[in-house]
Image (cartoon, rainbow, N blue to C red; front, side, top):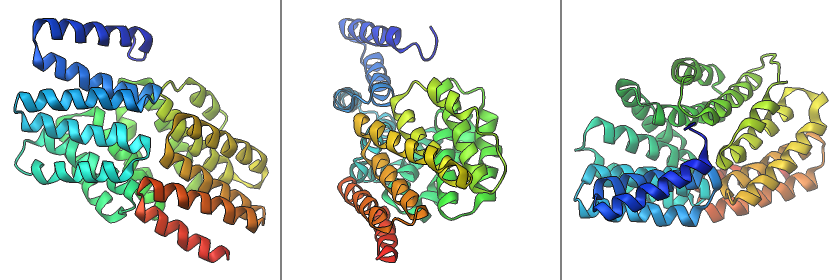
Length: 319
């Protein structure tokens, strides 16, 4: 079965759950519930259904009294479910609680918890803490060869460096941690990473051929990655030159539509912020203020405090 043949995959998940339950195999039932929960969140943004299976996995891990397993599920729930759903404060509190308990655990547990906490800090707007824990997580991931966490952790670290306008550091992360993972199991992750690299190079002032990014976007199968990639492409058109403003406006509108439809609230807030940047480039300050106010309201709803503060400072400069 292809790694992204999800219709067939859902059938196998459901069949596996039935067999594990009939046989009383708690370990298999826990693992299948966990992976099914992650796929439901990433592929089809069925967040409420994902929550049911994550909670089921947590209950079974508690029954088995496996602390490391509980911590890994909590960290993954923070990243796969709550971050993408836009419940940033939930994600931050859950991963922070896991972090406290992970100090006495093995490196494989620590790499997941450090990575999830770093990603939660990024979305919370605690950029220095995010950088510190993402670096710790990446080191452990590279040590163990864990591709499942090294790529999302590295992509998050790229975001930190772009926020700080440390573009060379961002590209170094791609070269050292992301590009070597081109054999990653899921093509969607590779496609998203390639779009992210194009955005990084454009922000670094490099001349890049962008013709293939739309094809990459269309080949992405995960709904969550579509949500995030729509913002990346919007930002690419917004920054490549002054000749692509119409495409930028079209893509930002598309990003707002996709993120609204998918219920990916944090990324929707970022879409509205991109619209504010678009209107600033058009010298349309009333519309720029309106869009950044929408971004602020959404980030407040998400509990993304650092982003609220960041956007409020921008709004003050627009008054």
